Amino acid sequence: MLIEYIQAALEKARYEIIEDDEPYYGEVPELEGVWATGSTLEACRKNLEEVIDEWIVFRLTYQEKSGLVNEIEFG
Image (cartoon, rainbow, N blue to C red; front, side):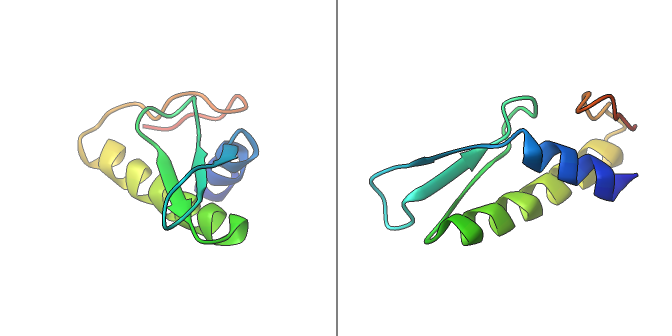
């Protein structure tokens, strides 16, 4: 279920190019505070996946609901 949640969140991600040392920026609007950067789009996506994973652990630790992504929710 967690893998499905992460994949669903990544499918909702929005990416843009910004002026920065790591010019690729990605975020998941449905998940407050979930964003990442990377030197390439693939690096950004990988970093975003790690942030989503850490966000899930944080939410579970503090017993907060995860938020609904593609009808998937936990917590």
